[in-house]
Length: 143
Image 1: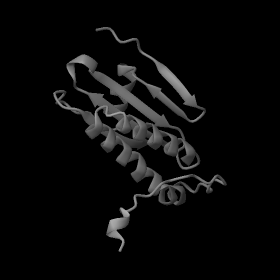
Image 2: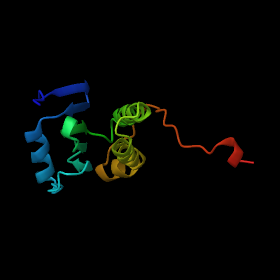
Image 3: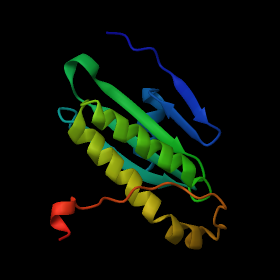
Image 4: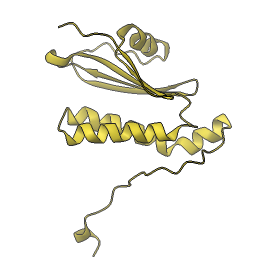
């Protein structure tokens, strides 16, 4: 199966690619390269000011890499929310739920750490207000 390589600019600060050369270079440069390609993998790291999330699907029918990059994530939290919502929709559709839950968790982790990174990078907080749904217990548990 031949997969056409793509780079898709979703927003000014979020892009998605399946260019394996770029992805493998990123994994090697960040010292996150793995050598077992028999299992699905989810890897995240920060490169300069960008949040990188790489997914590897080991399935025979859909094998390959996808990389999501949120540029300057401390100042563009809305892209993290968008990315989290994308994974929510994929999970809701029942597609590769285990791997998508891990990816969603990594995005949420970096979102909740944004204030810490903003202080570390000396970046101002955005004026935007984001709709981040926190998990809630079913009403039967709250009595």
